[in-house]
Length: 244
Ligand SMILES: NC(=O)c1ccc[n+]([C@@H]2O[C@H](COP(=O)([O-])OP(=O)(O)OC[C@H]3O[C@@H](n4cnc5c(N)ncnc54)[C@H](O)[C@@H]3O)[C@@H](O)[C@H]2O)c1
Image 1 (spheres, rainbow, N blue to C red):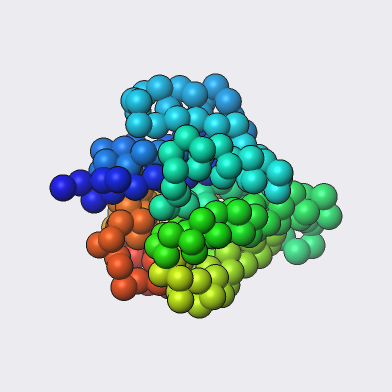
Image 2 (cartoon, helix red, strand yellow):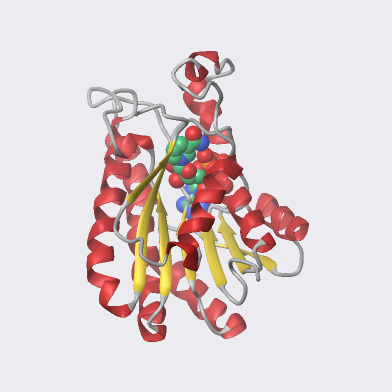
């Protein structure tokens, strides 16, 4: 039996990168997957590539109305939502001295408020079903300092705390909530962090290589599946021992 047979999963930011790889692993594990993104072309291409058990919906995680519409449409089409992966995110350089207010607001809106709205929109159906797994994608920047990215680190620390609070609140309904903390993973976002030469980043990783989106996806799959049935409220780091 596949690890996600019979389960319906929503993955935000699923057009590419970590979200796209997670969607692929979920489909292979037997799930029905809805990927969402603001990138329409990339989202539709990924869903087409993954086959008939994967579909794409345009969705901006910062919009409460968009979340309510997405949940209604998904329940109408598939009848249930068993897994939510709050993966959509943005990155921007800037310390506390030079982060503009509008950049701060945008970062918090996508990386933090998007996760809040997602949990708030999906948790009621999981509560009623008395089962569900929510996986919130944070970062190693939510485990330690990040002098180059003040707003990003703030948003990722917030996701870590929100995960623990939601896990404690929702446990009595059989709903699990965990956070995943990737290190340096080869995605379009990492190019923003490193620039064209990633050798400086590789030198910081004891395992001697950057992570792949599938490295992250396999951990998310574990947390989404019943294999992690007694895991909730915790942080799971996937970083090649970088912050060990
Ligand atoms: N790549 C890394 O090294 C790394 C490290 C730690 C954490 N992460 C986290 O992993 C997650 C995925 O990032 P990635 O590395 O795959 O980057 P990515 O840029 O390839 O993917 C992020 C996706 O989120 C989507 N997105 C952005 N704003 C959105 C919005 N408002 N609504 C819906 N979708 C939106 C983007 O269009 C994109 O498809 C993010 O939360 C990121 O912070 C990545």
